Length: 358
Image (cartoon, rainbow, N blue to C red):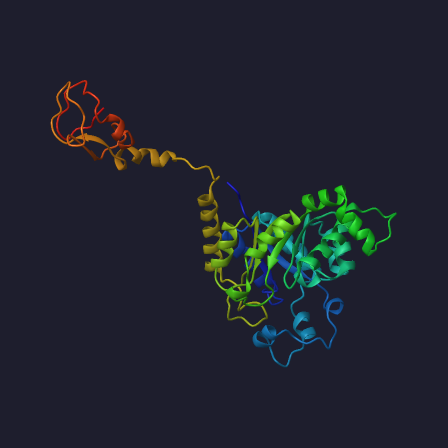
């Protein structure tokens, strides 16, 4: 049975509050998620003070607050990262985070010693950061919201070059392409990288989700492929699981009505629980693809199927005809598929009316 890796995306839904951050971990654990993911950044390294907010952020945050001010309130301190990762160890759930700048990436990889890192959609054209991600040697999850196939390939070229990690070769578009086309580069991408289809809108409308693009990515790049969901509810991630996503990432919150950019498009605790439960059920239902009766079906087979039945008393030596045979349950006698072969044959024993012909 294929098991989907489920990341409960806490993101910045802690609102900069320590207690809320720990409560989010508790919710992810209760839901049965495999990992809980936060976001790590230094606002000064990420946005200019004149950067505008996205439309959805303007709707869900203080209109007088700048993008810079909004993010500054949502930073997690390094000390809190240490506390959270230790708490996650105790609760037996993986701690993950996304770095949005080089300083934060260095902290996650070299200080916290994370084994897996998530690259956000917004950084897919940030070549220097992509290269730094690859050079950590960590397993990488690459979100592809807002991206074309060409942009994804460009990012994978940089990652392949960084994963090979040959300091004697100077970074360049040509060296990136050569690394991507090399046997070693392709092998390392398959070993280290998972790509996620994603629609970067909060919430994402069903008409904009295009789950078939996930299959296009799988065919095009041949890498492990999953889905990062920003839609409302749990229907779409369940559908993505059915379509073969090996990883599902979903934002969640303590309360959708809380102030902050991502709460409205996130699942509340009970919804997260239902999503994980539904995905685990779907995994079992997908099965191995081999068509045949299950052990539970075999118990019903003899009752539900039918046999050839004597329509009237048939004496030994009498021929079977279309008039003295009928078809009824149970399925413990001769299969009706033998009906035409049996016509004209001689009964070897007396057969009473309404009994199975054997």
